[in-house]
Length: 501
Image (cartoon, rainbow, N blue to C red; front, side, top):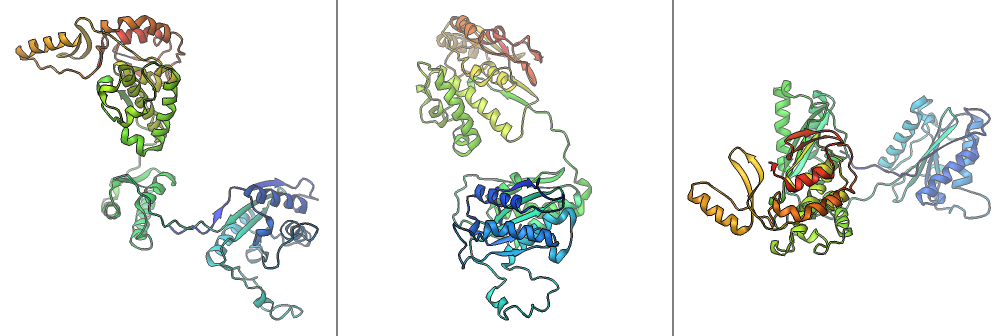
């Protein structure tokens, strides 16, 4: 993992010399136009460019065209701004040293320029053992080939047999920041992969040697990010979570021992992604500050929450503003209304779906319990985020009713708090264990009746799409994969009727 040699500016461009005499003949005005476009896009003056790497046709006509295009742009002689004497413009072409390299001409020039940045010197012209006697004897002393001054800008042009000009701009690499960032993570992912077992072992050996040598001061967070995000991932891989650089070295050493002693145990990862099911919990999972750490430290999750929170605010509900304080834990549970807590739960579940998608994890099937079946429908593409968040529920107290079948001997009973406390005493006396769920209303019971009609009216206007993935329905106790079953009537039943957990 060597240090950066140069920075490749995004202001690259390719054009074609339609007015050239023939396809292998450069055209100076077209090349000059490409130079101007690249420097303008990069926001630099051509007069600040210190070196131009030419294609170097090696012909009288071609070299003359290239010389004209360079002088017109980088060292103009006419009216207007002129190049200062102290700002030398150096020219070169790797072809003079390598000869014709065909399709590799562009990359050969690129490699030469990188070596020039690395060594701070221009390569001499091959085959020139003695200068022309008509030249000044101190020419080489007056024009040194070394240059390590900061701010070096290089333009590289490659001419193709299709009369095309490709021009790129390179600059000195940015200085490494000495500021130590406060990384909140307690563990770091270390991922290494290759196309074969042999290459994987070589990669692991190279990384361990780097960490023991020149890279001993490498920041673990930066290393984790580079390996996980900035590298392509191949079938043969090793992955671990480590707390510090010592743990990283131990992991690499252990894996290398395994590779050397038991190479047959190294297998490639499946070519197809595994089947993943998302299960969304109901409102009983609400607690103060749920999602606070993820919201504080994960940009993807935070951006999803903020975007969804704007949708919540757009509903203009009387007792709900922003739900972010609920997620952050800056308000107590007692201060949170039922509608706000429900919206916070489904908002977090939607944001988590976006978060997992950003990590490359997408469900093959989904299932949602109670209120969170709406989150499952949104994850399956049946409802939009706005449709989902607008399906907020409220309730009121009433009689005993089975709200959820959790198993042969496990039920959720809904009723008023007074009646539930009475039932709890009777069950305890009978030796039956019961637990009071911390929810504001008895969902899936008669307490939902007052809102079923307005809810159906609201849900009828939502757009229902065919699910993209399999949905497990707690209401029907079956799998759904059609566009007819899921509609406003289904949501009304899922709100009022008992469900399976």
